Image (cartoon, rainbow, N blue to C red; front, side, top):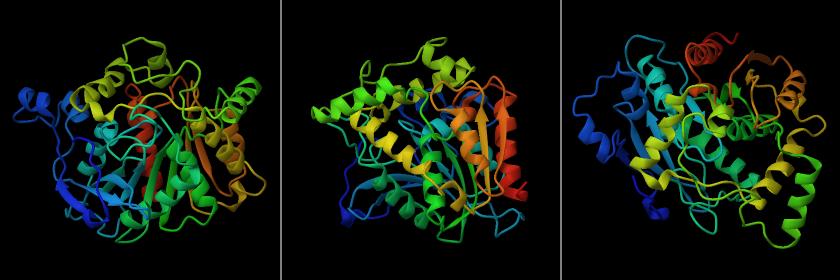
Length: 344
């Protein structure tokens, strides 16, 4: 699992999903799939990985598990997981276990510029943006990839939720039902000063530089400020650093001024007149009340404008609902799966 750059001739190169890195292989020879640590640090068996070339030949890394043929509804849609900024598929390892063991077909990919997809910035650590329109084009293509057997359900977090909402407002082809978790409808840090400073840095040609106070990825420590923003569970918080320790290519540093400028423009587009009202796909929004990264008030306001949309809030939860402490995490996942199953 190292960075790979593939050309168009390498389209859909499929390989078994590597469930363990070299350190994990020395640690485990016969994984106990009931062990919580194993479920967070060893990918489920039976998956395949592929680099899917985008229309401009940019390689995007994907993983897929087929549904189990165990008597459940054979027409049940696959669940496509859309990750957040700087995420990678392995951060969702525990959720992948939960869904595949329940018989769901599951697909996930690393956004262009992060995870093991080809990077964008001046260095592999710079969290740059290709333009949110490019990511929307990638999402359209990856939905076509995931929906080969019919429409899919989509479970989207943060930046993935933002992009999904924009996609749904533009028509939402291939999506049966959608759940967004802490979607990036607004940025908690987008003050007037931030906007002015971003505009100044863009005028100075500094769009490719880290934002003020940003830099390369650093390992997280239990109890640090970042943990308190993301999750109340120090063990799940530590999984990200563990995976990056196995595969350093997964690490991505902070955003650039260009990313921030693009994000604010895309947020403005999402909040434009009539955009939310154009969403007709059944939608559920799950919101943490202790989110210091995205603006939950902006999300509530937008979801109220989506016809028929539902939302639920989780008191005390941080930004990453699927890495929260139990029983909250399991409640979040169960709510999402119930919505996919029944629409309510």
